[in-house]
Image (tube, rainbow, N blue to C red):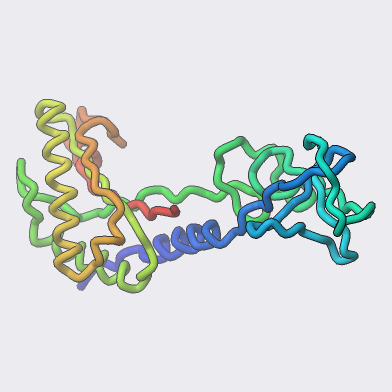
Length: 226
């Protein structure tokens, strides 16, 4: 009986990625008026207006000639103090550090942890998949086919037995083996954004015990949100 792969985590991460991609970018500031506020315009250069027809304006912009269509009626926008693309009036998480991905509420999007492909093992000192690993990867294929919009990367890790350079090469060959197997099972190569071996550089347990080394020898799948 196949072990059921946790495809729900894939679907959750994919939903977050889609939500992020669907968030409209903040309107850009265009021409500025004599009072020092820049008009907020769409990509075609048209001024955004509120329900009363007042032109949107941002504060503290250089003074320029006022647009006739706006007259004296200006709808002052409230700015975006943390620069996350969500106006302060709708930002439920003010003060978000710059560069952090946010949702439509202005709150950080929780990053999904890599999914460790447990049971995906290799022959000793080799990149050849074991038979049990192929069975587990069949579960992964089923999960990926159930979420066809998910894009992902594959990362490989080893324990510290052997030289760093050898382990780096071994981990790369192993993730390439996983990639080849998934492609052979029908997964579109365009969905695989990267395959990277990290060798022994990112342990998750001690390398002083057999159990710890077993945890460090792993293949991870991470959903890509961009």
